[in-house]
Length: 253
Image (tube, rainbow, N blue to C red):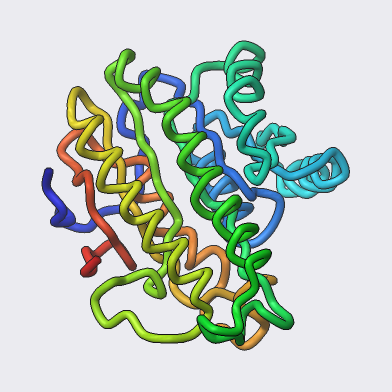
């Protein structure tokens, strides 16, 4: 598996003669919303996964206002047990998913959360973080990836973070760090098992982005944070797989 980025180029649909279908989780706001919007602008049929019906209605109105064709669907990644049946229903109702962007994630604030040390972190913080950031993406990936392999085309993008890098791993928000390190491991494993046909699995860090999680002081816009994910979601056949990227360049695990 190669991990080196090819010469940088504008994101593009790998095969313009084929209508692709993408599923973006956590797509009702922030980076996920920006990814879904951009993929739709590229002519991809986009399913925007959101947690509940109210979020689906709000997201649908927001996408419609922007003039992009995105279909919000209810998909709560924290409810792992029900994900396979929900995903099967989604593919039957819409189309097989060719592009998966595992974007939904949480960073729990408050006592025992964001500012807690390993010794102060609560069991609830660890459990909830892993349910959303690791277990959900793992179940979604193992449910949809076999179909991609069978059809000979697929792109999986896991939205990770430099906080999950083992290189230089330090203290601070341990539940989140561990979850992103595990998501990176999922990326490598899935890429190895799907290393056939035109199927590619990669992870990326969006950088520090102005979202509900990143806060208002972050230097990057959601659109900037979405760029590498969109690039990986639309890689050409000679693009990388099994890599970790930021700003379209490979970074250490």
